[in-house]
Amino acid sequence: MKLKNCLILSVTSMMLLTACDLFPFYSIPSSSDGTSNSQTSSGDGFYTPDSYSVTLADVRYETGYVNLDAIGEQKILVIPVNFTDYDCSDIARGCDTTRSDIEKTFFGEASDTGWESVASFYDQSSYGNLTLSGTVTPWFNLDKSTSQLQNLSGYNDPTYYVLRNAVSWYKTYSGSSLTEYDQNSDGYIDAVWLVYATDYSTDAETIYWAYTYWDYEQEASLTSPVANVYAWASYNFMWEGGYGGLLTPKVDAHTYIHETGHVLGLDDYYTYDDGDWGAAGGVDMMDYNIADHNPYSKMALDWTKPYVVDGSADEVSLTLSPFESSGDCILIKNDWNGSPLDEYLLVEFYTPTGLNEADSELGGYPGNGARAFSYPGIKIYHIDSRMGKIGYPSYEFMSFTDTIQIGNDYYTDIAVSNTASYCYADDSFKLVHLIEASGENTLIEGYMAGDSALFLQGDTFNPTSTMFRNFFVNSGKYNDNSAIGFSLHVDSVSSSQATVTISKV
Image (cartoon, rainbow, N blue to C red):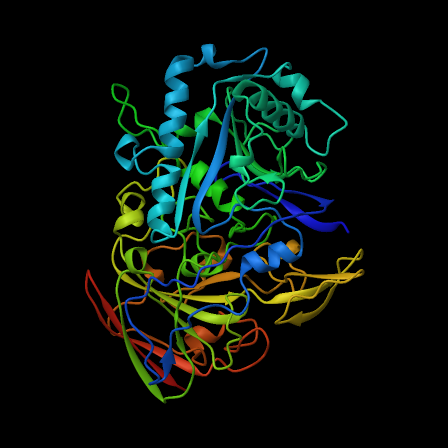
């Protein structure tokens, strides 16, 4: 059965494009019952789950997606690509040095880079749950020019041609069938990165920018795995940050980290639609390519478990450590379904430390001018990641569901997106919506979230108040029209911890 999916694309977070097509998927899910939370289950108005009833990996597996597993030691095959009219000898730093730069970008120590490598970022962001390694091959010489590839027909995407030929070449070059890159034994290489030797473009008609896609036309092979999920980006993204200056330049992995988030299965949290608005506020790796992943992403990838406020007490106080280093977060929902794939409020204690620090400094991230929050505070998100039963081949929304349902004429997918036109359900719903402490929804006016979005000591969030009810489609209620039922007061905030009190309303 072929299912509908949208190509996940990004040049930088300032220039965003998309394309959709039909394709089948195949994958093996991963899961973890570990938790990074420092506070144990209490029973006094909250608890910490040991595991999730359904994970993002479960949904993607059952609906046929191929994604890199987010738990354990995983391998990525990185192939630098030359064209007949542009190759590594045209790059100022030359072939050998640029290949070394690519190795540092993907697998180097943080100190080898201007910020983090792909591997060092995901080691920290996952709290040690995900370890990335792999090989950067020698340069693959494509037998086509940049224009010939751009105009190549007969493929769903011209980069399929590059992917297939590059993988076939490396099998011959290495003398390996690459089964070591199929760690889940599904017949597909777990992840391929293609880094091409020409500058990227912001022209919507060209393939020369950064995106993640799936070659769904190849049949799986357990004896000689083929590529499916892959990312494609220019070598030039390594220099967007301008780190180290001209004399001692250091590589920048921001774009490669963002695209690897897609390889793991995460969506974009900005919007692709003209006239739509960016509900996540920009300050996130899957939004404006900056800072750490948010709690929803980390729950979806099974890297952390929240403190779940369940309404068994009229009031509960919780002390949080910085989310970026601890994984501490709070989920607020009376009848939570036990999965990241539900609708709820999500709370984190943000600090401009760890993976947030560099992008929070004055000037922000030079690659796109975005800046993370500059001081500690509480972030509150409205998450609507409910699963939907989707008709096939109509792709029409049938109903919300808490279980994965697959049939000849329907399947299950996440029903809500931060892009209105991608929503199967009501297109006014948002997957990840940052609630601004100021009470002004500046995001709907097209602004990126600033420090005023953070809740500070003494601040109160009450969804039924005039100040905040307009952040919700149903005037202070969840999108399913049920009462949120709780308010949150920030009791204290320091550089190392924050205490909040959550009360029934």
